[in-house]
Image 1 (tube, chains in turn yellow, purple):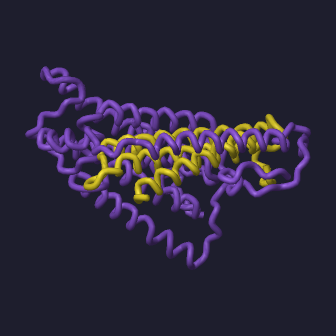
Image 2 (tube, helix red, strand yellow):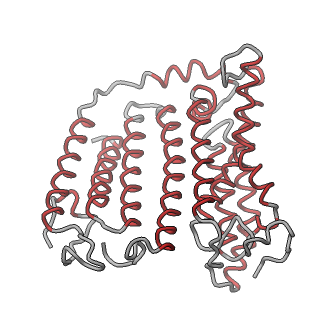
Image 3 (spheres, chains in turn green, cyan):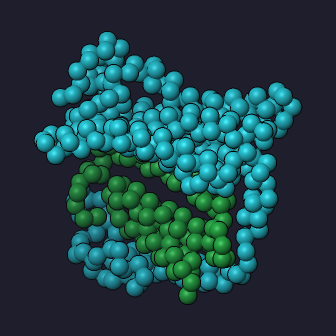
Length: 101
Length: 264
């Protein structure tokens, strides 16, 4: 098993864990964290897939993941702002309640 | 209660809960957990088997990047891909960041719960160190980006991170700057990028194409402009979601009178 296979598989496991969390967790904040875990898995696998052959890793894969990270950050921040707004307006019972869920 | 499949069970410690806990909202019952666990484990297996069976061939785009690197005037491969070969992607990415920052700004207007850190000798020492270090590091990273790993996004993150760390300690550095100036700085990077693209169009080159003889300098200029805008966009994005009201003055309405002392 090469290092690229190991990292790629790890990324797939992260993706599945995040997906499970996004489905099962009820609090919006936890769903947001779970989706971020999912996306990190995608990035890890993408980068690993671009560095399977010996030599320099694929620069296109790196550049695309870099773009993806920035877009994810924007989406996450907007999600957090919306969670805060929901909390402030008290639209649901309590999306930020730090209980298990 | 019920353990999901082994691959997905590790990240979610089993917890006894009733389906309708707190507020009567239906939660994830044991059945949903089992089904979700099975689906996720199955999906992971499917993707993993596809990934493992990928043919072990070398990337076909990496040699292309290598071949055309000289035509861009940039020495770093990743920077060349970001700003020359896939300039469209990067321009739209910066635009996404801008739109997200504007949306966060609009959604969380007027919130200012105050600083997070409790000030003391240790925090004060950290805050004093973090501002010059952040600026220095950001400058180095953007300078390095023309040659090796680094560039506008990493440098912008460093710069924005320093400002956010300061604001967490109650030092709202950006509240000394007028909001109108901040907003213009926010669009400065994308505007420079777009301007370069339009200049290319006017001179007969394709959109976003930079001539190779001045490519290095033009791309460096875009990187510096983007660094400032990205750093500020991050402050807008995270600064307003974190407590502290980082990008705005302490009091709503006290925007343009430069009330000066904001540090505690």
